[in-house]
Image (tube, rainbow, N blue to C red):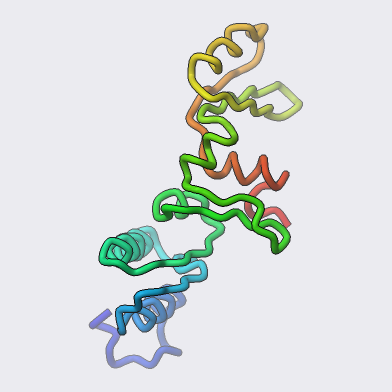
Amino acid sequence: MTEHADQLIDQLSGGLKRRTMIARALLHRPRLLFLDEPTVGLDAQARRRVWNLIRKMNKDGSTVFLTTHYIEEAEALCNRIGIIHHGRMISLGTPRQLRRRLGMITVEILRSGSGTDYRFFPNREEAAEFVSCLPGREKVLMRESNLEDIFVELTGQKVLDK
């Protein structure tokens, strides 16, 4: 950001303003840091730099509370995740604990004309057994479950649904 040192904050782009706010929050090397959607409005490179900075701060002993609508951001950065729905904490745990509660493996069944059904299984063997019993007319995808699956199953809505 050195090349922008002579500019007033009002003259900066939205992404540069965001980076400036993050830098300001980190100047005093806080032991406890609250970040509310820190990467909104950042390009992919700046976003990754912020992620690396958050990881480094955490490794160096800072506790970082992060709110985000970006599920991949939570998966990439967080050791513990709390899912809040309508102002209430409905689940808390490590990403692995949350995935285990739902099922480590997700089977997506793409039904022609009627959307996608999701089924969750504790392991690949049980998922494969389920898939082998399907009639074979549907397109099926088997994959590891993720935090978005957990959020949707717990809340009944996609992350940015209103």
